[in-house]
Amino acid sequence: MGIDSRGQGVNPVYFVLCLLLLALWVNIFVIRTGCEVLIMFLPFFAGITAFLFQALFDRKPVLWLYSRSYPYRKLKAYGWISAFLMFEFILAWGLRTGQISFNGWDPIIVNILLVGAIVYYHLFVRMKISLRFLFLGAFVPLAATGLTLGLGSYFKILTFILPGDKIGGVVFINSLYWVIVSVFLQAICEEPAFRGYLMQKFLHKTEARAVIISSACYALWRASFGLFTGNGIDEILILFLGNFITGSIFAVLFLKSRNLLAPVICHGIVNGMWRSFFALESNPGIGQYMKFVSPKTIFQFTMLWYICLLMGLALLVSIPRKKIFA
Image (cartoon, rainbow, N blue to C red; front, side, top):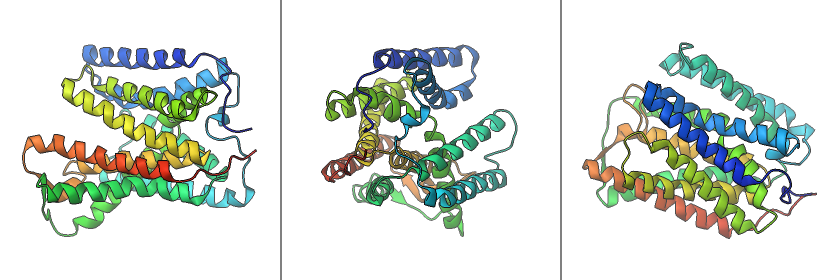
């Protein structure tokens, strides 16, 4: 049996409507109360909604959101070691830099990351996929990052600067920190919701339709984050198109790898690199090495980033799929 759900269970339209109503309610609540931190938890709410739909309405094991393969016992040690080391790195570096303080909402976020690390372990030991898809899941966003910076300099969208001595190591570690945090978050947030749950609901029709519909719903969901936060129509439109491209990348990776680990890693790197582009000076990222020529070029840089990711999507589509396992 593949990852296809054959259309069983609740109609996926209800799932999408539930997510959009949730995003609408959170946006209105943030406007009325000023509690902007709640926006940060919207991706987590998407994952929780998928788990509830899977367990209460579809009445299927939650692990089916990720993969239906059986664990590889030989990978268990490597899974625990990698998950433990990455989680410890998050705590150590986050506490050192002040990005984690155990005040306010931080304890909740740390516990969410811990659950994400456990889920990452289960994905790791169920890795019945060719390593080329893990490689591609990391290569596409990293190559898009390098290409975007190179083309941005060539087209004079940005210029490179040297912000200070010994900042290179800090930038690298900060970027790695944001990537790992996002990987653990995506293991229980948007990936099980849109690729694990929603996409599988449409696989009984055609794979192309499953990719397009799930990516469009994901883009609509992400665009809803900025509806009431002062973003203009052009920004919301670019956000929608960009998230449709990234959602398609994650969907194609899931479709061809038959495991959510590859899109989770890809999603983590995409989010981590984006955070690094616009990181604050208190926690420097790649953005400390570049300076935009004008405020208008930030919009052009965003467009260039999504075009480079679109090229990565074309590469993924051309790669032959892994043979479907039983």
